[in-house]
Length: 171
Image (cartoon, helix red, strand yellow):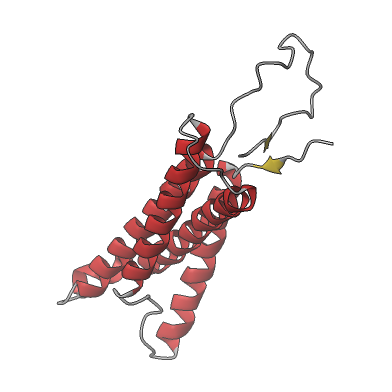
């Protein structure tokens, strides 16, 4: 029995962005009615986002190097599986962070002309950019972990409709 894992689907990432944008917009409406501060993450969270993306990328490059033939050392299959899971988690977390700050920004667009200090707007834009970087790194690292098709399998085998749709084999 071959073990397969689903890849990150762009439609799911888009759904996460739209859903968290709506939640972020509602949260901003509620906090502004209560005269509270905007629910924006601090700039220091960019450091955490960057560290997660760098760790994910380093592990992904290690798996990709092994996959591409530099097999000096044995690759732990558990490390490869964890790298795929980390990459998927990175992509989804980036989508959540991007969507949340898009929702807040959409709520604040009418007030931009009235603001004297646009620091919080630039903060949201920076956090949105960090979310996009996390999504890109997650998707790219997931692709790094994908195994090429085996040479000994016949390529003329007809595929059923459900086979391979969203399911891939990873290192």
